[in-house]
Image 1 (cartoon, protein in one colour):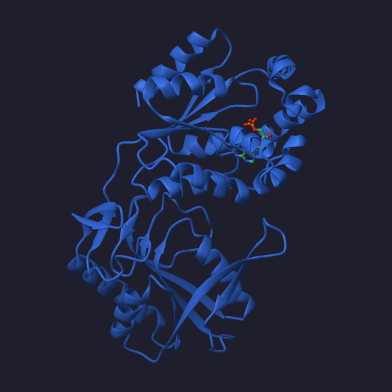
Image 2 (image 1 turned 135 degrees about the vertical axis):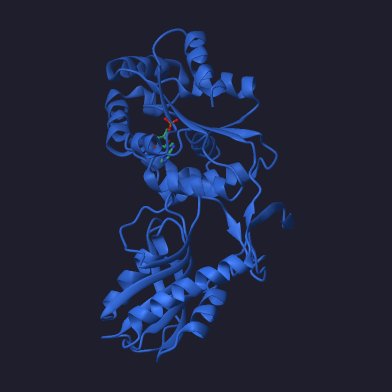
Length: 368
Ligand code: AMP
């Protein structure tokens, strides 16, 4: 076992296995590209070791270049612009082989493929040493991969954890934690907040309600609060980037937590992806999404009733309430299939007494 910064890692793939796999990949590259004079493009920083091994084994004319994908903020807070840096060759009409250390969600190779196509490449092939099929959400074809690995956080052989571990010649995976992380799901007014309060005591979990954190910031007129208010008042979602950064900061405030109840998060696929990434980096995962199912008209009545005492402006106006429910079905309900696919979705009847509903939820949690 090794320790990097605050985390422990255990051996996963030994160097000799990696070398045997690179030998096999190289045989195919030699066969496929002998007359193409390919340009190998290594994606920094993680791919440097892999690139060097591939190049040593390529027997025909070829060139090599290294690039980085830099991202910077556009003029709008939600707008991320990606730019390719370091490519000084003319790639028009050429066969380019992108060499990646790892393909995870596929965001990087998707952006990269588009940028290279725009520069006029004749053909783009993707070769990656590690590939995580469970995390991959994109359509770009992976032409060559070395290892298919589960969705675990790995270091070594070029890959790092916060800068450390790139020099390890074996690959290590994060020692998995036994955290319980629940996503409490359901439309506004389903009773997520009420149940979260009970469950956090019962299971000793940290409850994070993104709605509560936003309201706290609004009350204290922080920069985040001022930004979020305009969206919340209309019943719309706050932009992903703002919400994700806030959630990550809340999780980081509780390094010793036995687990979390996420209430009101994730609400979009991008948020779900980022939660997965955050928990994976801690050796943990979402244990379950538990959804409280309640009929729309019951929700509207509950929220109007709550609005009489909650002081929440978004509970006082039936139009805003209906918009929040609509936003839930338009933008958020797709997450059901996201977690169904991972066998992590559990629907629970959210109508009845508070204790009865707690019992139904506990049954799901106890069976995890
Ligand atoms: P809630 O208390 O969960 O009903 O959230 C109240 C409001 O806060 C929502 O209508 C959104 O405007 C905003 N909000 C809360 N959580 C999120 C999230 N995960 N993503 C975007 N907006 C959110």
